[in-house]
Length: 193
Image 1: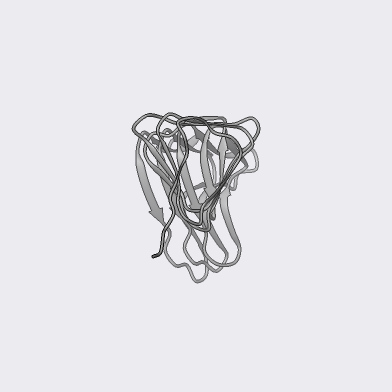
Image 2 (image 1 turned 90 degrees about the horizontal axis):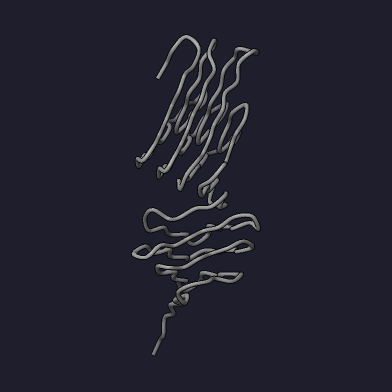
């Protein structure tokens, strides 16, 4: 949405995959909202988003919100039970760019390093891939509801709360540190005979 005063990109209750192209002499963003005169607002709420900046000469961004008007701001807000994966390519890379970035609640992976913000209930199955991490800080809560699976082939570090009412599987090579309440954790192994 664009008006004279505000440029808005709003992603709510949706699944979005956005990949920037190659920009030899410029920027590349998975999601880009820029303007020279107005406020810029990017909001993600209760959504699953993967945004990857392509290879670029001056900047690769997962999400880029920018205004060149010194009296205005460009804000990025992540709310609800969102799962956001932000990736960049090459030099001069920034996973998320804005005057202010508010990670109020949701799970945000930045180049494979995930963090749970606030209180999050998974809305669909989630995989932490090999080489990825997911951290639940002291003030955060992650709930795996009945009928939902969290599969971990990477590293989960729990310093907050994980409530497992669904299925939490630690695949071979995956690690889990910290306590989990609710259903038992399932560990899978490969047996060679």
